[in-house]
Length: 224
Image 1 (cartoon, rainbow, N blue to C red):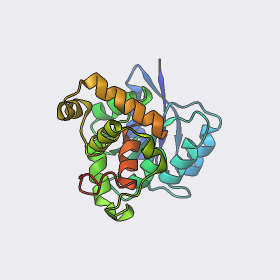
Image 2: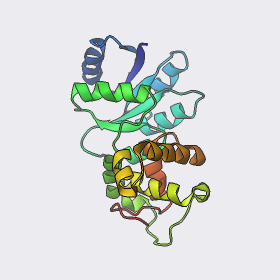
Image 3: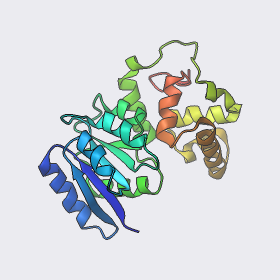
């Protein structure tokens, strides 16, 4: 199956570079490009795309708002937010808008290709620990009360599921969580799946965001 990719960036040179890398892959095809978010939203109305590589700082409509509009559509493509240097101030908003993850524009080609394939298969491409560093940096956006404001759906979780959710938010992999809780990795994977279902979340990235927003985990990675 060929993965249909859309490139959204106001820098033509960058789009050209990404297109050359993707064109060399037998399982990928660049089917559309756009120079800003507004154009991207318009193009997607008539073009079938699986994965969108989305810049954030663009004229007319930035990547965050474009991501929000795209992810609000029925059966939307997956979106990867592209940041320019380390973790810019738009990345957190991009994740909240529905992006499946974020990555640096200077990411090695092999990592970019792996990320596209992972997102296409339904996985999040950002390690939770990386997301945690982003959330720690922008902790001023998040609740600081120690009284743990709770999203109403979090109350649906069992005690074990809440425990797993907190460890996911602290950046642990399924294997690390299994070792910490003395469970099998398959059992942890089942718990994570139930957490996603109960909370109506798409992937681990959204689990991390919600855990911080509800106060289950405080900035700095500790339990709330």
